Amino acid sequence: MTKRWGLGPWLRHRPLSVRLLAVLAYFFAVAGLAALCFHWVMGKPWDDSLSFALTVTTSGLGVLCGAAIIRWKDRRDNH
Image 1 (cartoon, rainbow, N blue to C red):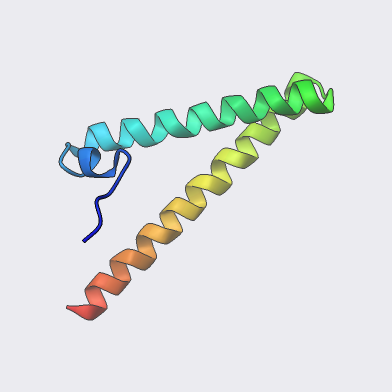
Image 2 (cartoon, rainbow, N blue to C red):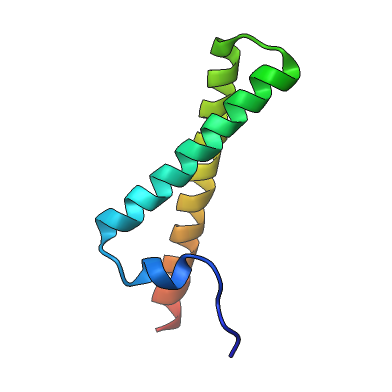
């Protein structure tokens, strides 16, 4: 069995509130970086940049929730 890297093993044994805060912090960091890059690289105003960041965040959270539902259904069907 290969060793897992990253925060996964550390987060797996933490309370749900800590895991949710870690996910939210990650998504806010990604959204902030997306807004800054969109503003500086594309030269767009801040309202466009923030709506782009909101789009990135909601699509990322949607993918995360969809993957969790698929994993949950797979575990439920295989046991």
